[in-house]
Amino acid sequence: MKTIPITALAFALISSTSAFANEGFKQADANADGVLSMDEVLSVYPGTTEDQFKAADADGDGALNEMEFAAAAPASGATTTTQ
Ligand SMILES: [Ca+2]
Ligand SMILES: [Ca+2]
Image (cartoon, rainbow, N blue to C red; front, top):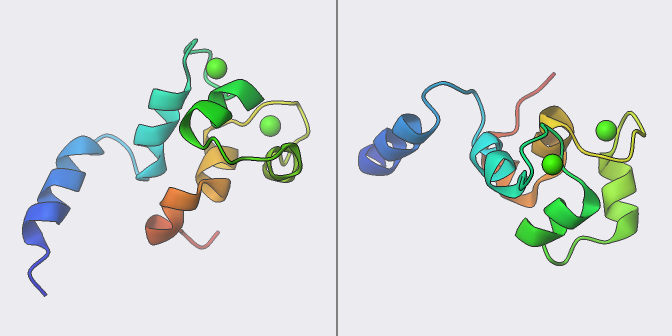
C-alpha cells in the first residue's frame, strides 16, 4: 500500500493532536469557544439533524466538545479509537 504521502500530510496537519476530527472541529468552531453549537455543526455537516446532535451530545450540555464531536463526526470513522 502506497499511502505514505497521504499519511505524512495528515501527520503534519495533526501533529499536535491525536485525531483527524480535531481539524474539522477547529474549522467548525466559528466562535472558538471550544465547543460546537448546533449551528456550527451544521456549517460543516449540513445534513445533521437535531436528533443526531442530541445523540452526539453525550453530557447533554447543548454543545459538542471535541471528544463528543470526534465520536460522532462521520469523517472521523477512519481514526476511530477504542476507549
Ligand atoms: Ca463554538
Ligand atoms: Ca456536550
